[in-house]
Length: 600
Image 1 (cartoon, rainbow, N blue to C red):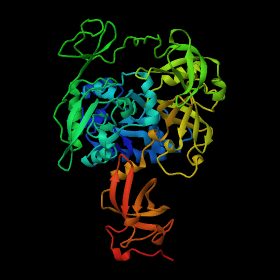
Image 2: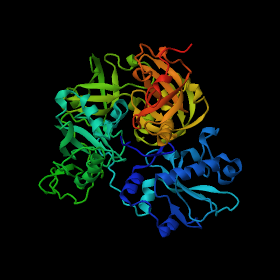
Image 3: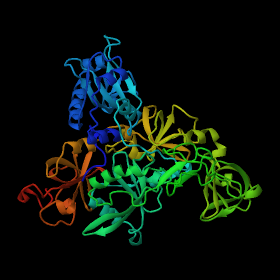
């Protein structure tokens, strides 16, 4: 199965780099442009051509960092060993991937991706040994790899940012992202999990930045399917049975959230071809989106008639869906998203919650509270006949309902700060409190939380890639940390963060160096009714199913293995996207050497 992302030392390469390597546009070896981008470089630089060269130079970077004298001279450190966050002019070598090295031997200079600024489009940095001959320093070259590639003249496919309603972004946290499909088996498995009546209906799809197809059930929001990230294309896709599998029967770029151009099918074709899926070769229903520069209305161009449906002014020939739009048309009741409204609490109306009678012309519109204040008891905020002030955060036109946020008016500064965050942003802070359900982070920027020790919050799974027993094994109060924004949790008034997103993934490092049918030795770390988990590398655990434990059926895993036992296993399956490792004790070994009874 083809992974949806490519990794070097456990860090995901940015989509534009993967794409330009595949197209032959990389390496972009242009000495003149490189000198203009990095004027302090006194010598020529060679751009690394492929993943193998990047992995090789990463090992050299590791060796330099692990030598105390060299590390001090070149200002390189391991962030996991540091007592504070590693900042420029130092390099956190664990979060760097070399993409260029000196052409002349002995110069020891490096151009690298720096993942301290995010995992999707990391910053580019380079070492400077010339400004101060006595002390090397790492300097920022470009704020993101995409900007660096553009400066080198590397053309990449257009990446479409989300341009739809902001309130839909809230769903990202609760619903996750779409299922990556990289093979016919992936598609068959995903469709089998859908309701039978839905399989022949249009599904939501996006092509993510790694040129991977992601699917979600019909009527799902595209920005949720994409996990809030930019996409190469998006729309609706329909499948039909074909032989023993499925093929794409219809596909369109219908996505008002991203508004991709019809020529984005080039990315769709790559994703579908890589997944081994037959497809029409172009959008069966191509759609052209244009925003009117006069009234701001987003239009679908029909029959090449480039005129606004609202004001009849000409529409531009070039794509401009990301231009500012006009304020949303107000419903007849006069309210729109973002309005501050007042009203009175009527009663708790299940299943919607407290109903509010709005003042003025909107009094007949059913309004309900979505977000309660982030301080105090909910019941105190919505007593019967109590007057309230709230922000309109969502309007369900079909059902005629309005959804309100009391938190937005109770804590306006924090609300605006959290609304300004985007998935993938990086925030620094200090661990303020450690609980068994997660960690509160006091952020360096933004207002304080009215109730919790910090506005940032990290759930236990997002703390680290490796297995750990206690939260305090990973972090402690007072520790400086850096996290990547996952979402704005409007229920609790928190920025949900991930610490592990900005750390190398040991599973991907293991996968880079492991093949199917490879024999390994590991330790049994957990026994469950259906099998046992074996640690085969630091932080990497695989499942040996009960049927793969011995050459004869066993009723219980304890019959043949015990906790802490060293066992030989064979790799029979490796799913990089799901981080799943499947092992066997029977395959690749002499069955006569495998005990069928628990050793005494």
